Length: 464
Image 1 (cartoon, rainbow, N blue to C red):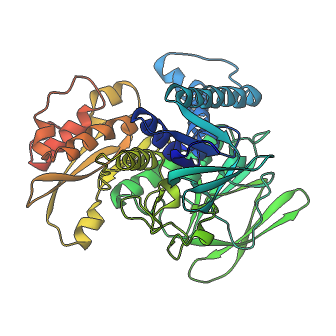
Image 2 (spheres, helix red, strand yellow):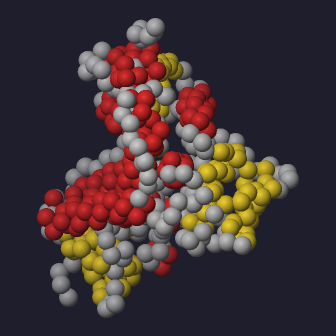
Image 3 (cartoon, rainbow, N blue to C red):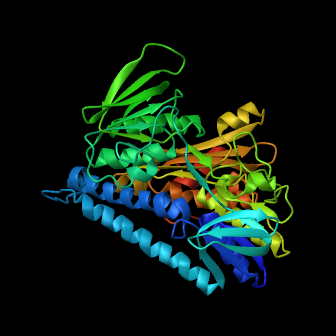
């Protein structure tokens, strides 16, 4: 048998491949096992990346059809070539997955195709036609997550689809029902609405994006309604029936009440995700919580030499959170420091306008009894947003009074998925709102809205 690896990673998503790259850079003999046939995990293959390709394409179409004339640009006979739209999405994914595979070679990481399962501490079985066993001093479980099931509803990826199926529809549905008003459902719903679908979003709670700052969430809902999405809030789906080629979706109030039926051609189930933890952990005795997430202490499980990162562990199911954990775990395995600041994990909804958030919301600060100050600034007063005809939204900065540190920022508007990174850096350095406010920003830029909101914390916003 070959010499044992220093590290074997089960799962080739953002957590796994970043862990592998860092381990290789640190000189660890490393292998990564992935059964999809391509590296990149859900995010790169059927999640973040292909959805952004469709979001961008649909936004360009919508702009050409509905908004460019107001800028003096007239585009006639604008139409959709859905086949080409899907092809450019697939081309982007293919190029990026090959790039990740190249990084494995560059960093001397062995890429093993197949399904990995831990047979015993230090031993991983790989099944990919011809079974074999690998040995390692350390094993990282990075098996990710899968779409959560809706009780009584079978996803067939034809008429009743998960996010995977919604990224590959062969034609534009006339009527699309999205079940779940979280990030995934709203992004994909907005894609198909711009392309011509009648979109209805059914949400169990009485608000969309429930973890988001309440004020931003309310504004976000109003804007999505203006864009043509219809919402059924405080409603639950109790059944989906296929009748004469269409779907009959039975809904009722979440707190009980009269049922009614919505007709649709396609139903997208986007009620969240669940951890994938079938890498032999039960037999090994790896502890999980009641929801099936692997419990860890600084990414170590209760079994010596076995680690876990990413979506299969508690916390936000975000690719960048998994990346940070993968790098930190590799650092620790190599005998170095490893750290993730979970108070500074941004979240972005890539609709138009975008919504971005980091840190605590006002609701969380109030519930914790923490005194804070808030500064706000609307994009309507931002020069660049006004000239670009993209002035919906606002920026909000929250500062804890006792420490004078920024503890949260919440924003909706053009390009805020990029702007939020500035706040993350500020929070990592323990900045006050005044530190952002007294930092010169280029004019005219969207990022000035953040600076003005930071000024607003101490009452000196430049606003008419």
